[in-house]
Image: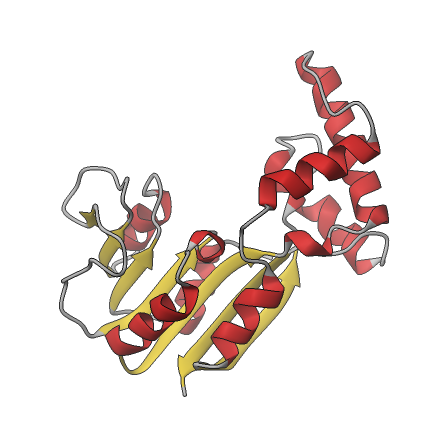
Length: 207
């Protein structure tokens, strides 16, 4: 699937970029090092010239931006529609939104079974506990993602405001599995139809 930075660079070769929900700032620093003019926002953003400790609603940074990027942050945004309306306002003509997200609702039985097996292998390697059963795993998964926006909420909100330029499903669960199972293995199983893809990337331009 490649890195999200590569995905952004494919759709935004250069320019001014707003990162929504920057977390620890890792992506923002990569974008900055790649030559973009970055403004990265998050209520708990780190210190630094490119960071702002604000929400999107509180942002007073003037636009326009050539791109808005959101890596695993939109599922947390409470007022999703208002946030995406604000993104449209901040983008320059021809600007692009790039999203890296996942769909927790796509964890079906076969995918959960594979994931549980990998967690058990990881637990054995670490000497740490794992859910007691597959049913326990599914219950924990549901509890962890309760109240978060899934694909079935985010995608219609994007489509109401943006025209798709690119979209793809891809691996996601390997992010929780350290070295036990990597991106390549998960991708191979997805391509073989053995498990479902939970990760997705989207790029679109305002309608």
